Length: 106
Image (cartoon, rainbow, N blue to C red; front, side, top):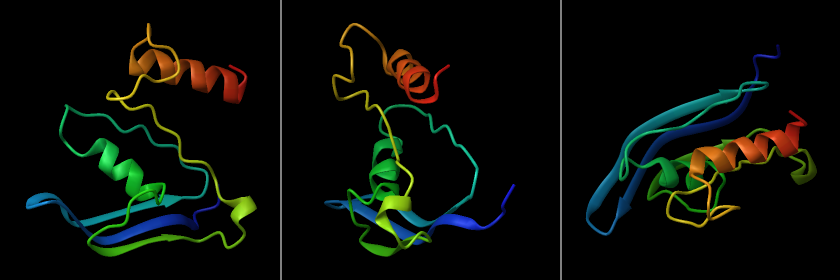
């Protein structure tokens, strides 16, 4: 496996209004790694994934993707419990199983 960083989050600080979501968050994903993020409601999972996908900017700190060509950037996918997901009759976990099965031919 190639141990080069794919993405790094450094010294991330994120606020929603006055509420502190993250402070001094540091996270690195190495090339080839796969991560599963889970936790209780309100713990910052969606905020973390939005930062990682660059759908939201931190109040301070950096998110650095090491691929320069946008065509080479990997996708960051998530199913939010607050959205309807792909299938409203399925849970978030069940929707993720569908995404994995379709995307990776499992």
